[in-house]
Length: 271
Image 1 (cartoon, rainbow, N blue to C red):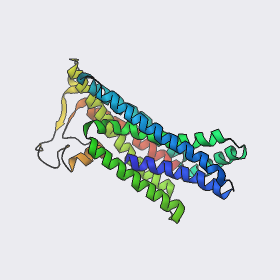
Image 2 (cartoon, rainbow, N blue to C red):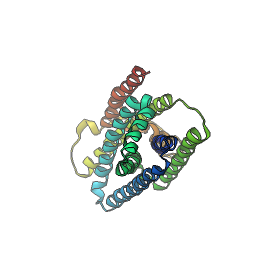
Image 3 (tube, helix red, strand yellow):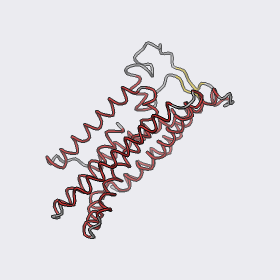
Image 4 (cartoon, helix red, strand yellow):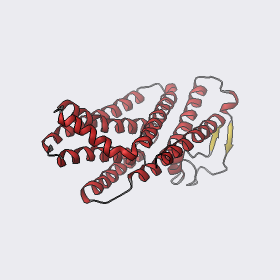
């Protein structure tokens, strides 16, 4: 879900820029945007590789702390970008065309490269941060899901701008923002769980916050267990788990209670 949304967002914004350059008779400037996109892809891949190398070089004791930190940073960045898109989705096309016109009319080649770079790298950064905790626990499945999300998003973006399929972008971003809030809430809970694991390994006392808030009587072999075939999907999508500590449950619910009404309010205010 995260790679689909982030890739689609980057692809749509990039397509707006390239389409405007073509329509305004500045097709020759498009290559500079592509230079920025290429640099962003290289930078995102390098960042992901660096994170993976650092994680694999950590002592076992610090692995949960690393995963918790990555999860909390991802939640912060993801929340910021969800809010940004909520406030900009209605006029995103007009704003990007205006920015592109300003850069193109001044002949600012560096600006066009940077524009292509920042649009793609911003989404790449979000994806790297979000996927890091899942890459460390299930690398193959995460990579497969990431590849599927990227391919689907690119095809949809192509259909919108090249084939002419019409979708209501504001409604699309509204519903995907709701999904991303659910994802971020689950990730916040997961980060809290990893932090508690670090406390346990470091022999730090979390008191009642580390005590189970609930435990579901689901066998480990069941597909509905949070590591099972069905349960793992809900675990990634919504932070589902068959057992959660009080700290994890509280963080999860508090994030939802704040972020979900806020995003719904922002979108409805702008309609």
